[in-house]
Length: 194
Image 1 (tube, one colour):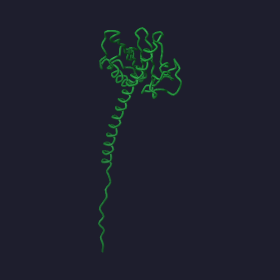
Image 2 (tube, one colour):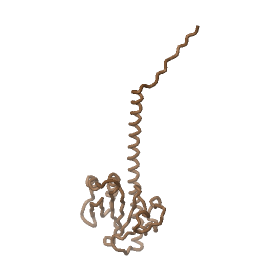
Image 3 (spheres, helix red, strand yellow):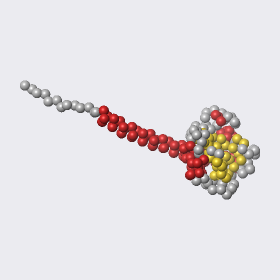
């Protein structure tokens, strides 16, 4: 007579399963947060690079031809026509002055506007539609640029040398200025055109 010796298979208890799912949820959550931080950092780096390319293009326009327009004239579409904006910023429709939906887009999918400042031979680049975090990160990045002469962060404005003797915003001041709800924050940065 043969006897069968079967090992008893036992499954997970509900408690063990709950612990495993809890650990997996924590790991997935940590990965999600880290990916969001990396994405936010990449957007800021991309926007900072865009600003420098845009400034270089408009500086070439000022140097070669000069710009004879009134202060605060919107010269965004002129820059689009002259290929001053990276191609990945262009929305795929013809730029029409005064129509923000046709303007180049920031990494946060909000319009970017460029204004002329004839009085100071400068150009002002406006990044609008920023969340508080995006505003803080982007403002910190562009504030550290050596040739910024003016910045307005959600309405808090500062003129810097050579336009005025103020000092750049501190990280704490930037955080305090980026205080609008939702995506209502903006950063306006002015650079000398020559």
